[in-house]
Amino acid sequence: MAAAAAGIVMGIIGLAMGGIGMVPLSKSFAPDKSDQTTTVRIAVGTSLDDSANTHGNTPGIALFDVVGRKIGSVGGSSSVIADGSFSDIKVVAGDDMGGRQAEYVSISNGGNDALCIAYISMTWPDGSQYIWSGDVGYSCGGHWYPSQTTFGQAGKDYKPRCLWIDGDDSNGITTQGLGMHITDFESTNERAAAYNKNNRLMCGSMPRFWLYNTINSDKSLPYFDPPLEYDPGTLLDMDESKVWVAGSNRDPKNAPVTRRVKERAASDVNNTTIGTPANSPMAGRLITSNDTLTSAVELCESETSRGPDHLSFFERKFCDMTTKQLYGFCEATNFNGTACFDTAMYTLRTNARSLKYHRRRASNDPSPGDKTYRKITHWR
Image (cartoon, rainbow, N blue to C red):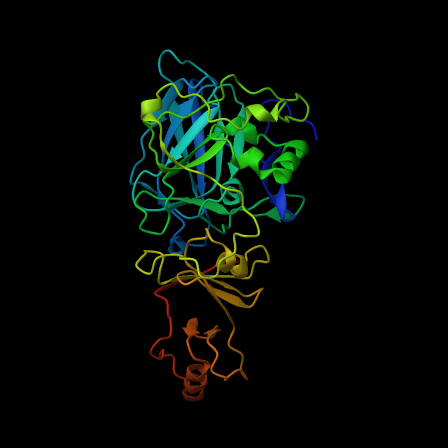
């Protein structure tokens, strides 16, 4: 598929059929045009209420043009973006920057309340629009969680994973923010196929996409110098060797502190990995889902997933996100002493004999060692 007309968002680069692909969009997910102003929409991971805890502080934003000149910025704040919603943040250009096109953008957490970003979209003063999905952050090794934000066309739903950013590491999330060349995520089938074939094209270039341990809206981003050249029809890089560079920076002493993004591979499976800390605000929360696109198995097997415990009715599996241990459901005839999840009481039974005891006595009280929840959120 050739590139769409300038300024029209026809699709989004995300995970489709097990790999990176182009997902068609049935409507625009970008904000409206505003003269002399670039508007950035931050959409958070979605739940049916805010107990799912994928909401968080409004992030800081900084915008840069094609040669790394700062167009403008907005500092982060403790104002909360609720689950399932978005915030349109307007960045007014400096007097000498006019309606310049913001090709580079940084997003940084504005407080200590972790934020899980499902997508970022942008509208330039001339009406051009761009969109990025949390699946890119997931594919590049960022901390992630499922979301309920739905894109789709002709009844084919697509739900991107959301990417966590946090200001204080209290949730086991070490990423404070990200920087990217958002125009490199304008989608064509050819570009998506190239990113899927070679993950390094998407994740191995600091100017293209990078995760940072320390970043705020005052920091200066790297940029491609000279600017990249693309095939006008497919948007493929004309010279891939020019992608894998550290880039130039107009204020290198004020560059963000980096952590290297990585390719997601089969080796990203580690059932003993540290997950969501037991003292995290996310602990004590449970999300249940009937969705075929949401996997408790994947969450438990991923080195980089973070968030509340997750129960999949479709898989009949429960993931304890603190220990990254996967459990089956307690069955009526399963009293062999194996730990299992009691879906009637929404309790992790550390010994199935305790389930037999409570069912025989119609008791809701947990046994010592059983895991219960203070908040439970049910996803569709």
